Length: 606
Image (cartoon, rainbow, N blue to C red; front, side, top):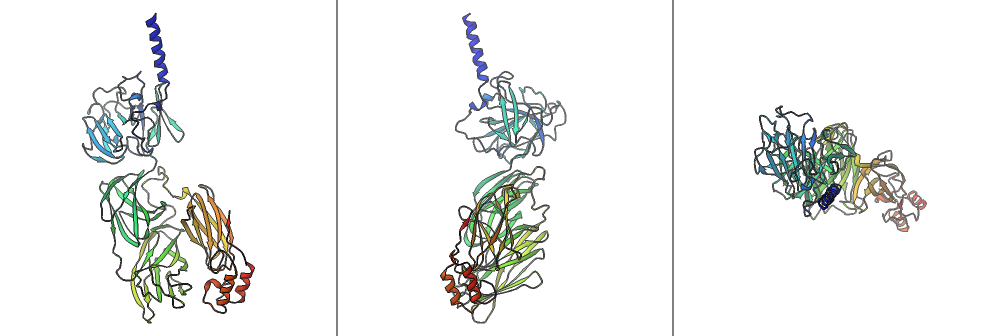
């Protein structure tokens, strides 16, 4: 009777243990879970297989079985639920679920070390494509599943006794995601299922192997140093690049080491916004700052080498064009014309003859103060696509430093390659014009129907960062009689986006969802500032802005100092900011406009 009672207690304890949640099992407390987007399912991306058998609680298999969830669990996968011994499995490829190194190879199995405390194992294989010690990339074909007749199954195999791959991760498969599918296990019912995006799939139901997009942060790039990496359709690698010089001309080369891979190089700013792109090679010029170099496949998948090399800039004075690497048809971009290697004695004047391809349109030319305050400016825009900007410093001012001479806006008109160049001649006040070297810029205009080359089809493409789906728009209309710039600053006062008001007073900017300060400004006008919040997926914000004229000294208040400036410049056109009505002469009409807005200040409008 006593023995019967003890057996009853043991039975109750065994039943109670089945009710314990799977999460209570921890194989190695010192091993952190991998990123949820690291592992895919063990077959070709884009295909659907089924699970034939999942975790076990000891009732179906022995307690030492790798399927036992107390041991970490294992799952059997197959292309179909009705697989038969001896059928042709030559096209049923088993792939690496993450990048790593082959550390075991037997007659029917492989094991991969993923270098972060995690290993994956694959059993019931044949026709191996890799060797012991090989480095493999995610989704690389390792072998086919054995058919059980021409190539035998692993010794000691258990049901299902049909062609399949036995797959396991160690230390554990508990809480792991495979291509975004979370593994669910109910030990009471001894049932394994999979859930992704609120969809739950049971055994013998299709599991689509489409991973979430994984962006892997890699090392800091140094010049003339060779780096290696791997990429696939759902895995991009992002390298850091620090540019320290005021202007930097350089070339990035990504060389494929795997047949079929065509690497695509994207240069991103520190916020992940795309600046330029190139297939295999990217030549660009960028100012000092922090950048990312993103490598992703234009076609294929596999290993690549990455090399960054500085390009030689002219030893003498030169101009350089800083422009976006790509635009969509109908989109706008900002072009900066930079003057480099300016001698200490400087230049009194310069002439820039800008030319660009027919699939671009230029507008909104804004001259900066490299030649001092209020330089004399002449802009000639003939009917063709070219224009000329002539600048001369006023009141004995001259350009004595390197920097931005002027900016202008470009619009993509039609798809294709485009070139921009602004060769210049300079003068040091001796009446002689001297031509200097010029560094041009090239960019690609994409059609709106296919804004950029991608590695994925539209049906399976993950959402990349900073694409249109994650941005919102700021649009509006500004009332002012001078060129107006719209700048968008984040909460850290970092400029995120900038644009110009067109001839009808309209503007449009795109930026990621977030909180910003929008600033509208024009020469001689009080700045208008707005606190805005852009929400992802919503229509955006539209502003109607009326700029007040009179803040000539740009101190955010219209006061007696602005009135005194008009008095000191009376009946002249020396100070453009004081010509409030933009009629070419500073007089009482401008003073009357200032009086209408006297004591107005620039406040932040919520």
